[in-house]
Length: 444
Image 1: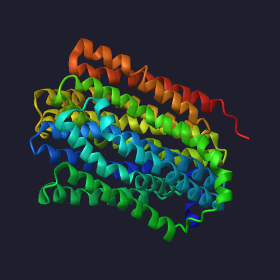
Image 2 (image 1 turned 135 degrees about the horizontal axis):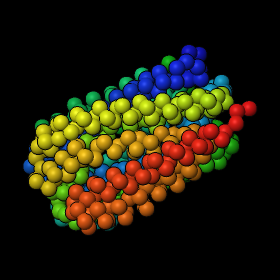
Image 3 (image 1 turned 45 degrees about the horizontal axis):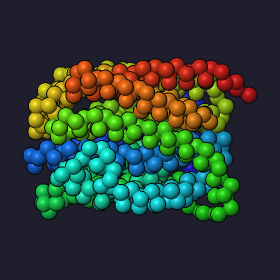
C-alpha cells in the first residue's frame, strides 16, 4: 500500500478535501447516470410510451437491489477509512477482503429470489400488459449482475477511503463509456430494444469492477486473502453497519415505489414522465448524490484519528458547497425546462411533470443533500441506526401522506410537490440532529 495515501484527510484544508472528493465522485456518478438518461432517450426514440414506462417500473426494482450494493460500499468506507486513519493497514486489507466475501454471501441468494419473482413485483407497482412484459425482459438480464455491482461499488469505496478519488472516478467513468458505446449498438444495430440497453448495462458493471479493483491490487498493493477465522471475527462488526445501512438505503426505493404506484393511476404518459425525472435528477444533482460517499472517508479518517473538530467542519463545508451547487444547477434547469421536456418525445402529461420538476422542484434538492450528508456522518461515527430511522421516516411518514394528499388536491403534479415538501422537512431535522450529535462528542 502506498504511503502517500495514508490518512491524507486528517490534515490540510477540509473545504479542499470536500470539494475535491465531491467533484471527483460526482463525475463518476454523473457519467453512470448520464448513460442511464441516454438509455431512456434512445428508447424514447422508438416512440412508445410503454417502453419508457417499463424502464421506470424496472428502475424501482433495480433501486432495491442497488441499495444492497450501496450498503456494502458504506460498510467498506466506514471500516477501511477508520483503519487507514488509525494507520492499521493490515486491518484495512483484511476488512476489504471480508466485505467482499459478505457481498457474495448476501447478494447471490437475493438476486436469485428477485429474478424468480420479477413479474410479481412489477404487478405490485402497477405494471400490466406489454409494459409488464418489457420491464420483465429488462430485469431478467440485469438482476443476475447484482453481485458484480456490489463488488464494483465496494472497490471504488476502498479507493476513496485510500484518498484515491481520481481512480475511483476513472472506474465509474470507464464503465459509463462502455455503457454509452454499446447502448446504441445493442438497441438499434442489433435491434434488441430494451433488452439491448440491459445488456450494455451489465457490461458496464463488469467494467467498473475491473477498473476499480485493478489499481487496488497493482498500485495500492491491496489483495484478497480470505481467512475464515478473520471473517467470523469481523462478521458482527460488518453486519452491525450493513443492516442499518441497507435498511437506510432500502427506505428510498420504498418511498419511490409508493410514488410510482401513485403515478401509475394517471396513466403510462405520467409514468414515462416520472421515469425521465428519475433519470434526470441524479445527472443534474450528481454532486448531491455523491456527497455521502465522498465525505464519508473524510469523516471516517478524522474520526479514526480522533479529530472531532474536523468532523464537524466537514459537515459545515459540505453543506456550504452543496448550497452553491444546487442554486446554480436549479437556475440552469429553470432556463432549459421546456427544451429538456421536449427532448424525450413525451405526451403532454409527461412533459408537464418534467417541466414542473425543472422549474419548481429542483431547488428543494439542497435539503435532500442535507439528508445525504447527515447519513454520512451517522454511518461513519458509529450511529448507523440513526440513518435508518431518518430514511424510513422520509420514505413513510414524510412521503406517503404528502404524496397522497398532493395527488388528491393537485393531481399528477401534486405527487412531485408532496414528495418534495416531505423530503425538505425531514432534511432539516436530520442535519440539525447530526450537528447536535457531533457537538456532544468529546475528543480524548
